[in-house]
Image (cartoon, rainbow, N blue to C red; front, side):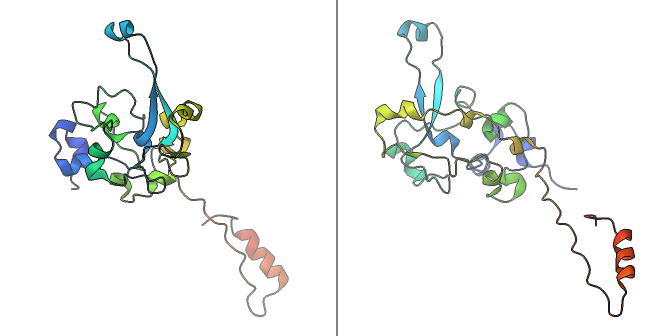
Length: 202
């Protein structure tokens, strides 16, 4: 009998450090620069949360190809506003993308087929359109801060259609190639054999 995966039998608070770190699917969405709505202090005191807007500008440590951090161990020192996710902060962080594994588990949901823990392949997060690969406009060090508002995008807060599938989409089966005529086989026999064989079937 197969053992139940840890993310199905443990809560976030019960996971060890290795399990916690492996929950990150490596999409890089949370490493995009986000802009916070400027609201009056009175509204903040009243409990109003400012809106958060994603941009397609990457953190200076984000690798747009691998979608990982270029200096993960020292990210907190090099990027002071980098938020460290913990079981306590997950529920409080309102800007996590809907595809985030931490968010899914915290809400009692399962991981999808494209998560590396399920597929066993780190590239499925890219194949499913979850990651930021090919979608990062520039690093935050490459554009003036005042231009960030022009780079606001909505896709980091959306689900790609193929990522919602309950399992990995199957590759279309290639149609069978016509068989070559057998030696001394007549044209009429070839046509009859082709009619008996279902087209595109196994």
